[in-house]
Image (spheres, rainbow, N blue to C red):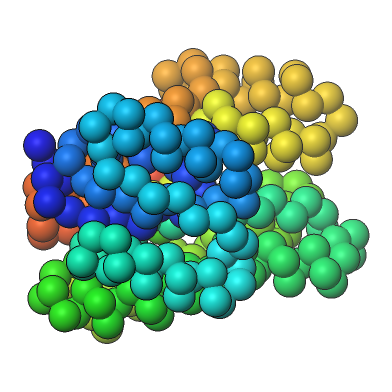
Length: 252
């Protein structure tokens, strides 16, 4: 198994891409600390993973709060003795143009999408350095490279996240590898929320799927497969990179 003996923290783990990663990582032998706001779904996920023979602990909390990130790292060490992998999925959409979005919504979006990765990395990196090895994988978006109407805070935060990942890779290599994945339209609740920025959300989602070269939305499992590769030792010479996984939509 590709992650046998590894300990991973996965944020945004209760649905969508984060849940798919949790399922996949555990199936490959990882012990996982799971994070999310929905305690009921989180505990259900924890229970199902344990019933399948995995090792999982769910911690409810808002990752835009510094203390929550400290707790995640502390619980990884307490429960599993070390920390090998961090994957950040949690985020916020923050719809609106610069003149439409509220100051509060702007700050919350930047905090959830960018600051939270800084907070968790700040606590995780020293533990990884103790091991002499570690991997951080941030979930960004094609919005880091392409602007979308009424997504000012989201696009800005995702672009900044790619820059942060490259900086951390530069500062902490060769001990710690840091990469980001940049998904396109994936069939999760997030894409339907994003489509609300347009007049006809259902039509927009259908058109978006057809605009990919693969003529479909991505599946959470597609993203989990790439994430698994990037956090595994098979990707040991990959760091500081941003991987688009978008069905080819940016090619058009």
